[in-house]
Structure formats: structure tokens, C-alpha cells
Length: 138
Image (cartoon, rainbow, N blue to C red):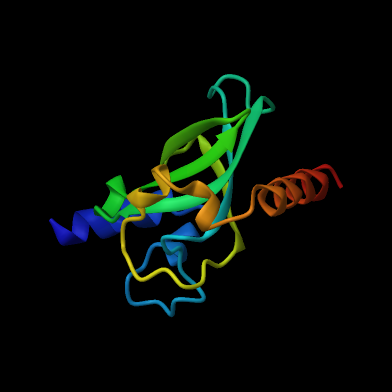
């Protein structure tokens, strides 16, 4: 079964995103809880030009082989929004780490739901989202 799973990951790993989810990689190279992440997704398979962007703090990673997923959290118009993304989904076009989280010693950061202001500044997060969107246009 491990061989089948490795082959499925190799087929789904189009842009080298499996390096972000390898447990044995150095912390600076992999996605960790507390990182600020930018994800670009397609809205449908029929129209590849229609995309949606989401920037947020990674609060959890579930490493399950091909079913690996991660949860991003952001505050949009004073409402907390959490989105779960499947790492190897064909609808996910790009995953980019904008800023590495520092000072987090937990694997799951669910406590950010109560105190989001303690861990990251919303102004810095908005600035990074705007710079990522501007870089995409150029």
C-alpha cells in the first residue's frame, strides 16, 4: 500500500509541493503551524482562469499521504474565516509560504480562535496578501 500511496503522491505533485509537507524536511523548508500561507485555487475545472486567493495563518496540518490537508485562518471583515485545503487537490494551483511563524511550540494552534491578535498583526497579513496579489499580476 505504501508503494501505491507514493505513486499517487508523485502523480499529484505537479509543482513540487510535496516538499512542503515532508515531515523529515528542515523546518525552514516545510509548512509548519504558525506560518502565513498564500493559496491560489481554481473555482472549477471547466474554467481554469477563474481563481480565488486566500491568505491566512496555518493553524493545523493533517499529514495523511495523498489526503494531506491544512487549515488556514484569517479575519475577513471582523469575522474569523477558516478554510481547509487538500494539499494534492488538482484545484489548488499554488501554495506559497509568505512568512515563517516564530515562537509556536504546538502542532495545532486552535487557541488562535480565541485570541487572534496575540499571534499576528492583521496589517502585516493584509500587506503580504496585497504584495502576493501584485506579484501574481506582474
